[in-house]
Amino acid sequence: MGQVKEFKKENFFQEVRSATQPVLVDFWAPWCGPCRAIAPELEALASTGAVVGKVNVDEEPELAQEFGVQSIPNLIVFKGGKPVRQLVGFHDRKELAEALA
Image (cartoon, rainbow, N blue to C red; front, side):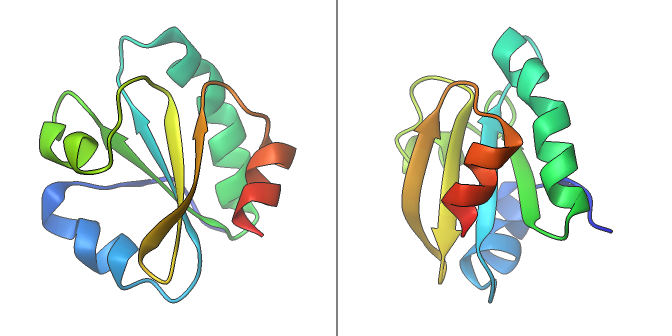
């Protein structure tokens, strides 16, 4: 099945903005404990076929700024290329799947 993708400025438009199905984007950083804790939940969700990706805020500060990310983990659901829901902090895969539905 699927796996968690890595989004960068170069592929964000193609992978997220022009996606035909909902996309869950996790804005995270390697030094963030809750970000590491939520990683297995994201991987489990991606393994079900959901489109899940991560943006490292240290490497892609422009993307983080564009979407108003001030604290992490910050998860944004995109539908039709537009952000429709935002979740901040740790959430389990059930909550994440419901946000994508």
